[in-house]
Length: 423
Image (tube, rainbow, N blue to C red):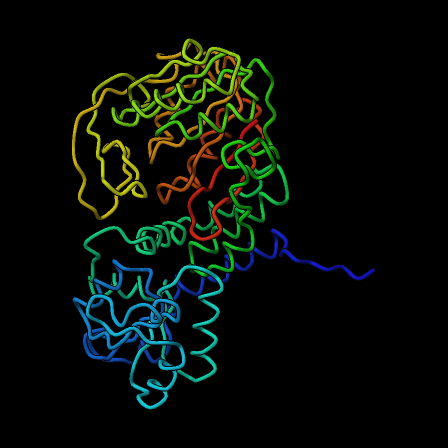
């Protein structure tokens, strides 16, 4: 019988991780092409550059301040605009014509999706262009001390995550065996490969999408592969934001539940939660207001006041300063009260969502009594900090409460929405 293997086995993936990590660790120049290592001085300052892709705006800004970008390649945007940042927009055909005549130009591939990456690399290899991939560009940023002045997705999920994965590769590989199913193991190992390479093929190979709002397989936060709900659930929503996952939970349980607790330190978000509950009431028989406790505090391991950082950009995530989650961005600072799940609830949770922008470990530590007493189902985000993918599953496993742990990557386009599900 012919076997059609669409996914590499965990054993094959482990060998691939080990091989890549060994090559990079034994020779730091191995990550770069030979022409880059043979170049004298600062590459970006001494060469003309063409950026392939226009979406990585902060990385482009940083390059424009440092080097000489002669054009940006974007087939769609060039139909609408002649330039961005004062830099000419060109098509793929114009790029190939230009670099074919001026071979000294370096093409910088600054895209994150698989189709775009394949498109640009295909042209570079076909026409024998000098080029750098996103991970090579970000490591060159580090080498030449080039910094983005604001939030860049590639930068944020780049060097720090790469360095952590490289340094802890043996521990990361060993942890694979704690996951309960084969797809979790395959997904987890592909994610490590993505962190080591920023090659989107590893991400898109295993990403399952966010699913519909209802309870279904691969639904973000409420993945039916691992979670089933009764009409007697006590849901603790850590990082309730404006009530989006509260609404999703109500859909998942068809409005039948025992109680809901929301933890959210942002006052504006809490107002939005209250408005959402009032709006949603028209769809449900059960009175929602009395069955939902809105806790206007951050979730932590104990009760205190901590520094809270907020930004106008929701993609950055408002977060507790002491969580250790930081990006290169200006934030507004304030003080907020925090508390623990054990202190602020009746320790009766049947399902807890931990998505608190880097404070997940502290939140877990503050719910030990609840976990020991009720062994609730858990959804834990493991993508905010480089160490989360290792420390959070390890922490749950170390509690020795008999949890089975699944791993899912939900987002197809970037390495967030990465969760473990414990049941």
